[in-house]
Image (cartoon, rainbow, N blue to C red; front, side):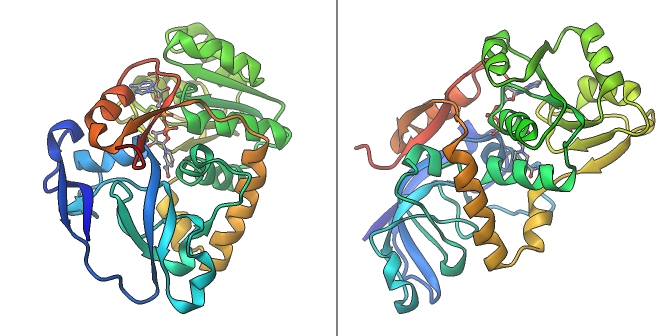
Amino acid sequence: MSNTLLRYCRFGEPESTLELITEPLLPRKANTLRVRMRLAPVNASDLIPITGAYGHRLSPPQVAGYEGVGVVTEAPEEYAHLRGKRVLPLRGQGTWQAFVDCPAELAVPVPDDISDEQAARAWINPLAATVMLKSFPPTGKRVLVTAAGSECAQLLGQWALRSGARDVIGVYRSSVHADKLLRLGIAPVAHQDMQAIVHAAQRADVVYEAVGGKLANTLLSHLPETAHFVSYGALSGQPFNMQNRAARLHWFHMRHSLATMNAAAWQTEFQVIWALLRQTPLCDVTLFPFQQWQSAIAHYKTAGKVRKPMLDFTAH
Ligand SMILES: NC(=O)c1ccc[n+]([C@@H]2O[C@H](COP(=O)([O-])OP(=O)(O)OC[C@H]3O[C@@H](n4cnc5c(N)ncnc54)[C@H](OP(=O)(O)O)[C@@H]3O)[C@@H](O)[C@H]2O)c1
């Protein structure tokens, strides 16, 4: 049997670096599940490593993709109950391939009432949001999120409000996001509206920040010293100045949280996430047949997109 996968053998722009190849499926290792993939999203978290941003701890060749959903085709006897069931095959191989092998104890069973489209993106952004909110609680606080058009920021904003945040302001780049933010209870502020951003920063208690560069500098130079500034992304590709600030600065990287999370705690986190996702509208998706991965990445790179691109392994 063969496997089709998207691999990169050097760092660079994903469009020119990824290659779709077909190769024989190797035998499954002990204590792993083999999963036939159904859907995998295209997230910032999938594309950034391909550019070499984490080159100090990741070396090609690698199969791209961090999350997704599929059906178990092979399992060790201890996990025989998972054969034919949907799981998230996480923390094993890259997920942008037709068959993924993953550590059996870390595969997350998907409840029947969760759709493939919800399940495929149940990890990176939802877990980052829940862990950040646990680590830097928003209860009773004035919260500010940046990149407010992103799925991660919208989960942070909605779940901060559920946790009792006083209010949430969302700084967005494309105006297409403003109405949705209002519907979610997040007060929209345009990226260019420096006066409103400075005013919001002066009153903020917690900032969850994913843009970096000029926006981060503006926020940091106006936040009060009691505020917490949580940096979890750098979508602008620009660093920020760490000197000119009074607020407390924190870095959030999911891999640090995973390093201290055992398999039982990992599975428990997903019980929380399934419950939250049942009550949280995620953005719509656009499905791209796996073979059309270049179109999926082009869609991802379109400014002002409101639908998450997903690779569809079931389309032929
Ligand atoms: N640290 C961690 O462990 C961790 C975990 C999960 C996610 N993240 C980070 O969370 C962020 C969001 O990920 P996602 O999957 O939720 O994204 P997403 O849904 O794909 O949305 C990306 C958003 O980023 C905005 N954006 C892109 N470039 C920008 C720029 N230069 N300036 C301002 N906004 C920009 C886009 O704005 P437009 O709508 O205007 O195009 C879009 O709304 C990423 O930085 C990702 O790395 C970090």
